[in-house]
Length: 265
Image 1 (tube, helix red, strand yellow):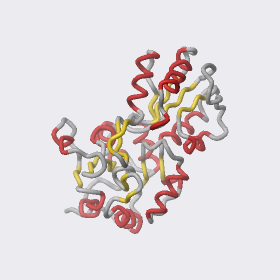
Image 2 (tube, rainbow, N blue to C red):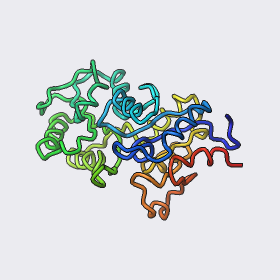
Image 3 (cartoon, rainbow, N blue to C red):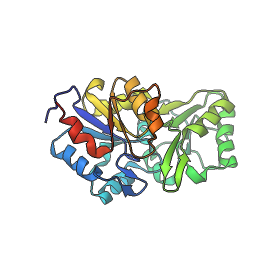
Image 4 (cartoon, rainbow, N blue to C red):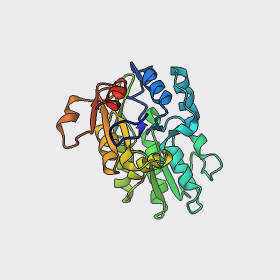
């Protein structure tokens, strides 16, 4: 199926676009079935770092969506892939246990280590963040001036079941400020993440539409990388998102509006 416009493939955010927490968004399952039935190149591109790709694949299957692990790109998977070709060094992981699977086989420090890290990787720990944990990450950076801080995405907040909740970016920003160094970002809004997604679809950046609920991380980030960006009015969307400097290439009431947008004249 070839649309009348330049877009040939889609990158799909998950939380806030396909589901909210554990609840599917109306029309999402049917829309993904439509995408797959029409053989539209697609990839689930998410900043979620609390789960492995295997767990995310199982979650989608539980909603009625078939997606192999290879159809999902997460910051943890991208960072682990990069680390396997980077200079060898000990890794300090600040991610949930379920996400550690992506780093299997890499040299990881014990969870109480405060020295010896060449790479300090920060993901979404949610309620597991406390002063001691954040301070340990700082000590690992401070004790090795060559240590690289790695951020698994730079999303500011997300919509949890009990309301808006802080995501990775605020904790990374605190560590950047305290340690006096800039994080290497794997995940949205880093251009390399969007371009990696487009590359996996074997499409040029301008042929790909990123669909998300975050006007900055999803839409602005994608546009800065040369992709198109669509904003859905679900998840953490707020009407004020449409009043700022970022202008989405498409605004959809929900992911269910994708087929109509795709088939427009």
